[in-house]
Image (cartoon, rainbow, N blue to C red; front, side, top):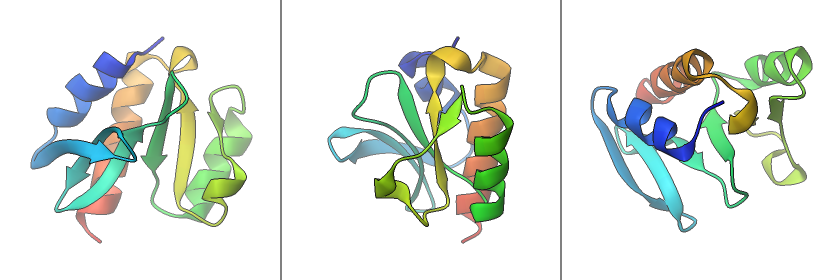
Length: 104
């Protein structure tokens, strides 16, 4: 189980990351581009992924952890239920999001 505090600690530990609000929630940026933000729904993280193929793989592999909504249709991001994601998986998810957005 991960928390908002785990998200913040792991995200800001990545090189070049800044934190500022997005949609009124804490968000994490690299190179001026967001790669993750806490969702308005408590315990949910919005996290960018490399592409829609990666998003679909996550959604299919673990629907209890990862989901999306109509708002994110066609968007290379996934919603993660933090209470179903352990710290190691959260760290990997944030690192991959950071890498995907850093190079765009």
